Amino acid sequence: MDDLLDVIEQEEKHYRKLIGLSTDKKNAIIKGDIRTLEDITNEEQDVTSILKNLETKRSGVLADMADVLGQDAETLTVRKMIDLLEKQPNEQKKLSDLCDRLRHTLDEMSAVNEQNRVLLEQALEMVNFDLTLFKSLRQAPETANYDKNAYNTGELLGSSGFDAKQ
Image (cartoon, rainbow, N blue to C red):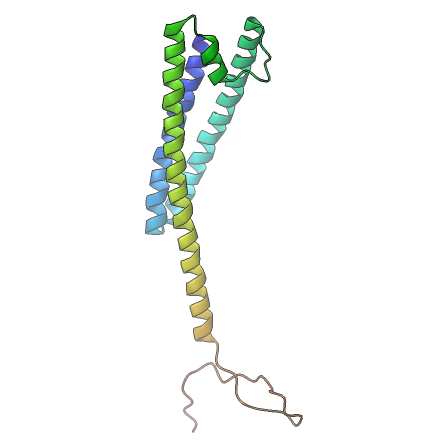
């Protein structure tokens, strides 16, 4: 039981760290600081790797607990474990409180990630707008020249906006 509590506490701690990194990421997105964004992303990958290992460890602890309790390891979840601890109210309360805290942390992280997603979409839209504007500034309009079959030749005016040879 102590192993399960310890693993869940560590998971909650690392998700809190991810929330901090995501908040820093939000500020970097707003400032357009690509270098900082890259550094934060690398740190997030490290924390995510740790979380993946903790998830594997939690699954192993639950499988061990399922064997001891005579439960199916595939279907035993932390919530089900809380229900099974009805005769041990202290452990049940600890596990329940810890799970609620983790759930709250995950909800908070989800909200911050949603904000970052919206900010990134807006930043991409702005970049696309800037690229389109830049392309249109460098493109000259087509001339109204036609060939002998009355088709537009599609010739472009020169790239400079002023012709000094007139």
